[in-house]
Length: 408
Ligand code: ATP
Ligand code: MG
Ligand code: MG
Image (cartoon, rainbow, N blue to C red; front, side, top):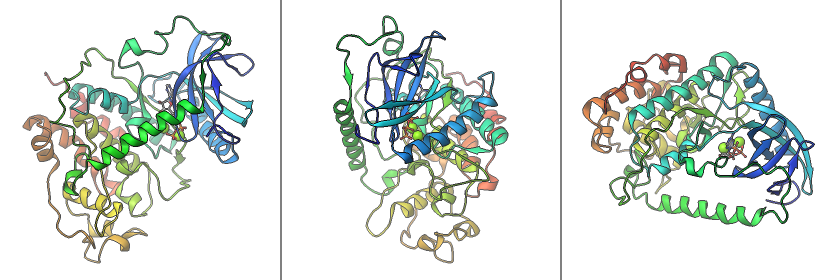
């Protein structure tokens, strides 16, 4: 990927935008960009520098992301809406072409990291509550004030404000900001990237291999709970505030530009069926994310199988947990006929094993009856098959589950 049109190779100490920013270390990467911790000299602060690949389609995507991020920043001058703030943007020319760069406020680890750090076991419900509140404040702002659909809400795209493990804080562990290029500064180029990418890919393959049957993929395909010999890690005293990031796929409500949105496991039924979508599709992803935080496992981890597709398995898993899909909804999408007969039954998966959300929480995840009931009462309405019946982020914020504090 470090070739013409691809990523820009950065060395620690490289400077950007006429010397305003100095690269400190790599924070992460995605399909479109690499993201670096940088020091913003005039403002004496650390920032996240997102350097887009240079090919025209990536530049165009970055321009769209900048447009969305600018709207977000404009409506949130006090930085209180739980959405990442755009600080600056500019172009940077390098050997692989011209790269659009976005400067964002520097945030901590993603919720995906938090889930892994917590070894896919249950997270304290008070912490889940704090995170849910932040994400809902962010969604309420995007949906109600800006009319923006995020379209890719998932643990990876929600970042904590501070790091999980302060000793691994990229800012604090560095002695002082690197203001100039050090002699022979370490090259963080393509080689490192591909090794890490390969590792991640292999890990994903192994996780899939552990999914044994269709049934096993409800409430997580990765069977770690109960088999994990490692002790729990302490998350004592961690501030659970977070912000929503990655607006590369976000769109305006009246200008949806893609039929297929969202990452598989967080995808709403109307999206699978190509029945059109709205801000309520983000709410579905939110409920999947909240479940995953509370249990450590994905709510739906569909997999294709003998004679059925991943989509059909996904619909089956949803119905096993949420009941039969109303016929109007099942037959209402452009792809409905691929999966449903005219009675609203799946064509290829006939025997469904129904299991309610609160039973799943009690029986598989060992929630107390009370916790299970209260949490299910919060999540269940958001997982309504009918998008227009799902509560909005604003309505969810008023739910009693968010406004109580359980004693441990
Ligand atoms: P994707 O393929 O997910 O669309 P992308 O190229 O658009 O990726 P992002 O998801 O925005 O890139 O960022 C990639 C990674 O960089 C994130 O997963 C996160 O680890 C890190 N990151 C992004 N923004 C920040 C930030 N503001 N502060 C700290 N780290 C960040
Ligand atoms: Mg991302
Ligand atoms: Mg993106």
